[in-house]
Amino acid sequence: MRGLSLGGNYFGLALTGLDSFSFFNANALLWLQLVVLVPILALLAPQIYRSVWRDVGQSLRSMPRLFALIGGGVFYFFAQVLLFQAAGTLGPATAAPLLFSYPLLAVPLLWWLNGDRPNILRAVVMLAMAMGVVLLLRPLSLASLAVALLSAIAFALYVVTNSLNNRQSHPISAGLIQHCIMAILSSVVLLIRPLVITQDLTSQFFLGGLGLGLLASVSYFFHYTGLRLVGGLRTALVAAATPLVTALLAMFFLGDQLALQLIQWPGVILITLGGIALALDRLSRQ
Image (cartoon, rainbow, N blue to C red; front, side, top):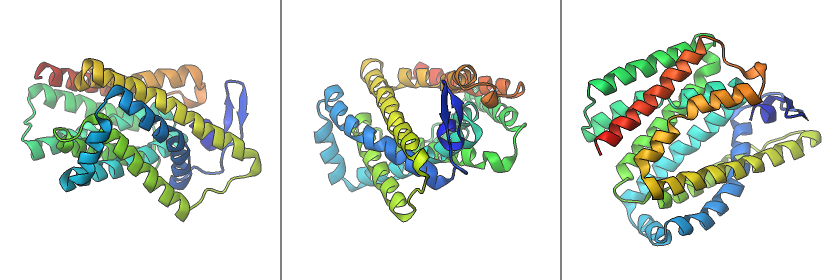
């Protein structure tokens, strides 16, 4: 993502990069990803959940379910585009942990909407995650982090909206519909503001976006397979390790220019442990 946005040398390849990486550049990259991802999801979903098309039809005929799915798709679209933008400017080692600080907003909203009252453990975990965010933010300016924080807010609203629809739509059919909604939104934005890049960068950007689509397809395959085999809560427990894993991969594969500062590592660890603790708490109350 960073190489496609601002250029550099990665894995022995020299990437040109753009002069700046804006919301519209990130949207174009997301559109390329969805060009690959949506057809693969349409082929993959029936193999994992045989009643997916019947469930999709029921969701489209039910206005409350459809509105909830549209709301989730819109929030997920903004979360993804803003995450792409943040990863392109700040690097994935910073953007991913900040995205996974979404429980700081999602947990209070779920408490307010569902009466899901937090216990002492949740309060301690939320405090630890807030401390982690502060440590992660300290070396960086607020202006440069605004996009990543907005991505976390959008993702929190996506999680809350999906929780309202969990009892009505299967996660696989809901995900398929929401990715189609994202593709529509991304196409509209791309029509309004097309991406203009140099001829030298066209192939790099195009192939990079399609490559992201293939990687996302593999990720969703394992995610949906995990949902079918072990359930959503255990899958969420594994996903909670994403911030630390992303930071480590960025350090080992993307070089020192994207490495976190020493003070930021405790922040990443606190956010990761907080997400794992929240998943374990939900699992214990299942």
